[in-house]
Amino acid sequence: MVDISAQKALELQSEGAVLIDIRRPDEVADLTAEGARIIPRDMLEINLSREGLPSDTTVLLLCQSGARSSYAAKALRHLGWPDTHSVEGGFSRWLADNRPVKSVPFLSPSDRERYARHLSLPEVGTDGQAKLCKARIAMVGAGGLGAPAALYLAAMGVGFIRLIDDDVVEVSNLQRQVIHSEATLGVEKVISAAKRMQGLNSGITVETVVRRFDETCGDLIADVDLVINGADNFAARYTLNDLCLELGKPLIDGAVLEMEGQLSVFCHPDGGPCYRCLYPETPPSDLAPSCVAAGVLGVVPGTIGILQALEAAKLITGFGKPLVGRLLTFDATDSSFEEIAFSKDPSCVCGIGCMQLQKGAA
Ligand SMILES: [Zn+2]
Image (cartoon, rainbow, N blue to C red; front, side, top):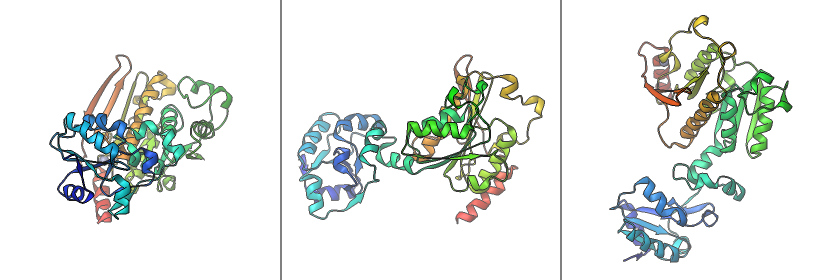
């Protein structure tokens, strides 16, 4: 039988059936059935195929009145999920009969329109977008790496972004730092970047801190969910690593030089390795040339900065596999990526730090 009662649906749900609310986002508004996933009718087949839902899954569909879900159930039966059913009376009757419901993270109609391409993605959806909108990020450096990362984080709707940098925009920055412009030459980078980000998305908050990041800046990362490092020097990198370790904040680190770039996620609170596990000591200055001395191709920080924004999106929403214990390197000369796995160094300071963290959590 295609159509089943809400009571029967609840019984099947308790036995492992998947309940899907197929109403449009504006119909769902802020309420759905308890335990239901939300996949709009027009995305149903494509999303279930993409995620590879096993064909022996019992699928229960819920719409507003029970009509659309009945047609959709018949379609799914033909498309490879033969045990699909429609809940009679839809969500209207579900609500009238006091069946269990749950609230859906609220996104305003304008947010639903702005983030429509995210809401269609099973990896993000309404829950993931709501997490992005609530997320708080600190970004150290508003230059080559910070420029693309900040633009994409603003575009994706990350609710709070704190930019920390003490430089001003110079003409030699514009070859790669696309967040700035000729009109902001001489302006503090964080002010220039914030203006561009707010122009892209006025719904987010951008806080600017004109300050060089050092060991006294712990308060600037204590109240955020994660930290992105776009600073171009080793001192800031080690300082950030140690502060993130102490405060239990994931650190998305990136570095670029000439035609190459690399990134990784350090200090993950679940016990991932830190920057010192990979590079215990600061390299001698003659072995660590800066972009100023050696140069960098404009698109290299663009590539790495965007990947840093991607890692942030993964850590915030929970989809995919973040670069914890994995160093991703990029070579622009042959457009190749390589991955180097690394693990926690037992003799590293982070071992002690993590034990303290775990004790704190317990
Ligand atoms: Zn370590």
